[in-house]
Amino acid sequence: MSRSTCECGAPILRAVDDLGCIDCGQPCCPVCAYVLESVAYCAFCASQFLEVTEYRAER
Image (cartoon, rainbow, N blue to C red; front, side, top):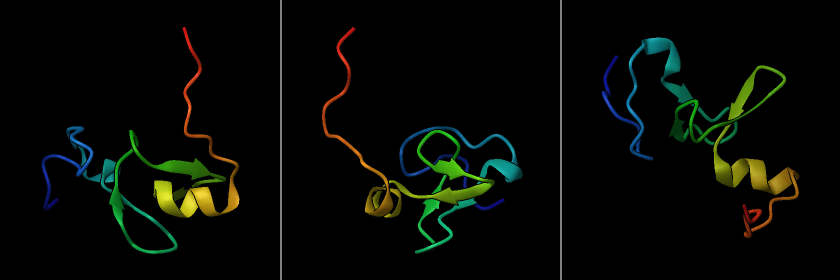
């Protein structure tokens, strides 16, 4: 394992959590990755085929 934290700031505690986008290869972790049918995508690649809104739901 070469990283102890992800670029998003989340800690990477196990090597299995050090994911990468299947499309562009951008490193990501379970916190910032979008996992669809066992495949991880970074936020940018996932937004290319998912409807992603910029506004979060208010609590």
